[in-house]
Length: 120
Length: 514
Image (cartoon, rainbow over all chains, first blue to last red):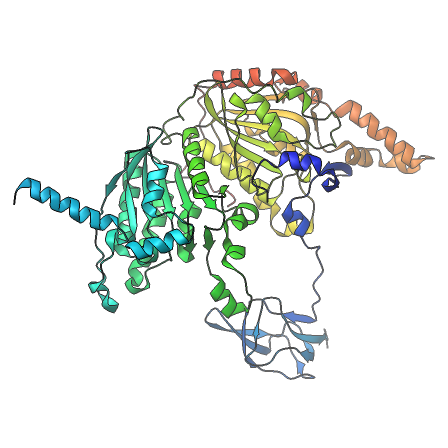
């Protein structure tokens, strides 16, 4: 971020001018830092179970290959002074567990992979 | 003891208390590149205007051997003074005394000066430089914070409240600045966050520096929590003083007028805006071309740069400016720009500052992250703020005013008093390309050369609808004006709106989409 009047510099750096499409109109403009850094959206894969909150795995209730039902206990994720019980979101088979008891994980960390079996 | 010797004793005692945390602590403060709390207060206020209160206040903590500890002023300086002759209440946390930590009496000093500010109806300036709650005082320090937040809220919209972050401001302490109207930060000095790097490291295993987590640049660029960014404390103080000249003492007054001054010749209003509506320009140059002395005092300059807000003067009177910025993201509205403009409009409305809006936008920013961040709710704040505002509202449409963007940007339909349009204005339901593709879909698809047909239909649509006259024919635009008349008409509009009376239905308060 330049503190001084940025306009002169911006006018010079015309290579930074991008094309921006709104309602099929093509506009010449600069991007903001936030816009440049934004990540494209990706659909979530329901067979992957990710951590909803950062914390520590204090207990794992299942093993790889277990057949589980929706609502079964998966792990206890200790976070914010609370033992959060994370349950299985869909019925199916636990294909892979990526965490160990005692491990600290960030938000979004892949805890387990499932093979979902609906209407069985 | 004679009065003379008693007075001497007072002076001796005062001298001792004015030392704050003592030589060593002061040295440490200076070595961090920071001024002392007292130097800060004296630099912001007019010379010899500072009157201090509660210098001899003592803390009452008894636990953890606190009773044996002497904390001069209990870590905060409070008082009244003037800035360019205008009165203000001020407090400054003193980091040299117990790290500026907030205990019960420290908080009491702050709430007392806040109560004064609200009673006296004068602005409040708070300088934050504190390690946080004084843990030894337990729940009493939490009570202190709560009582400060409560007063910030009551004073909101009655007196201007300014927060200056000149050191750490962490945990609950951040919420007092967040509740105030303007937050000033200084590079490498200000640090604002709810949970610090240590906690983040313990809980998440993520390592981040204080500066990257909650430094001045983060809040000026990324979060929008800061309104003014400076590279030194002295630059920051100049910004505060300048801001004070633009705003009134309280909500039943107007800002003090200045001597009118013509804009500088170098800003030629007819030479800034390109004829092609797809090309960018810096809308701040348009502002500088029409306001007094070409002096535009921008707020949140580095955050949500696709909209520009700030203060200036028209014929000596303070005005608030809101303008789409085609230089960034073509000037679209999005989550951040709506938040930025909406809050500013509400400040102007609360403090009797007329609002001038410059419009040139293609619409709202498309994108999954925008929709999923709630652009509906955030965008609605802008509609709410414009609709609710009863101060004079004058809108100038420079070029594009398409779709929802046209409505949101201070349109006639949201009770603008005057809507002017340049001949280059394009007021239409959407951009010509999009509109022609929908209206003439059949013709385009069935044409022998669809691309040629599309081009022709876009051209037809542009000629017929991309102009100010359709809206002028309905009275949605009051006057189509020559660009060079802009300043004259704005000055006139402000002049005739001085006695404007406009009220909202009686209510306790509205329920804006926060």
